[in-house]
Image 1: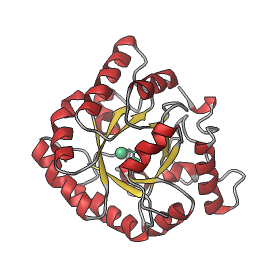
Image 2 (image 1 turned 135 degrees about the vertical axis):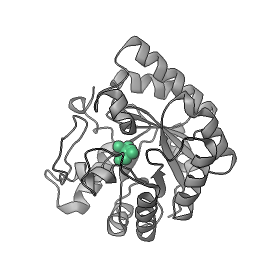
Image 3 (image 1 turned 180 degrees about the vertical axis):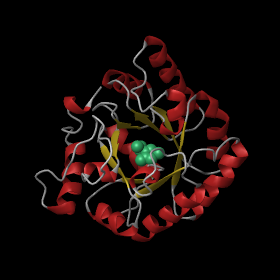
Image 4 (image 1 turned 45 degrees about the horizontal axis):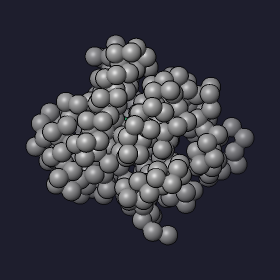
Length: 263
Ligand code: KIV
Ligand code: NA
C-alpha cells in the first residue's frame, strides 16, 4: 500500500473516514502498528513519562526525540510519522525550524508543537519551509506548571472562546492538523466542524477526525495515573497485535471514544 501523507488524512477527513494514531517509540512496535492499520505514529514527548520515568514531559530533549524517531522510522512501512518538538525547543521561529529539521532528518514527516495563537508566526515559518505542522491545543502538558496540573481545558465560556480562536488562527497560519487534548466533547465537535483541516482528539470526544492514545496506556502497561480518556485495549484482546487491531477498528467504527472516555 501507499505511504500515508497529510493529504491522505485530509482526504479521509473530507470523506468522514476516521483515522487512528498512536504514540510509538521504537522499531518493533512501529512494525506491529504498521501491520495493524494504524495511520499515524507520534514520537511524543510523553516518552519522558512512559519510557524515562519522569513525572512530566519537561525533561525531554530534542536529542531524545531524534533517537526515538530514527528507531521508529526503521520499523515503519507506510505510516505518517509525527514527532514532538519538546519543551523549550521552539522559543523563536528560527529555533523551531532548526530543531524541526533535526526531527525531519531523523525520519519524521511532520512535527507537533504545543500552544495557541502565539505560535502563528512559527507555524507559518515552518510550513512555508516545507515542514507539515500539527498544533496541540487544550491540555498542553509542557505547560503543566502554568496550568496547575493535568486538567481538562475549555470548560469556561472564556476558555472555549479562546480555544476556538486559537484553532482558527493556527489553521490559517498553515497548520495541516490540530490535536485537541482533554476538552469537553461538545467543544471538540464544534472546533472540528469549524475547521477545514483534520482534528485529532485525545479526551476531546468522538467527533474529531482522528483519535490518538499513548501506546503504554492503551496496552495497559503504564503504572502511573490513568486518565478518563484511556481505554485498555488488551482487555479481551488476543495479544498486542489484537489490541492494536481492536483500537484501529474501534476508532474507525466510532465506538471509541465512548461516553465514559469523554469530558
Ligand atoms: O506526547 C504525547 O504522547 C502526546 C499525545 C498525548 C498526544 O502529545
Ligand atoms: Na506530546
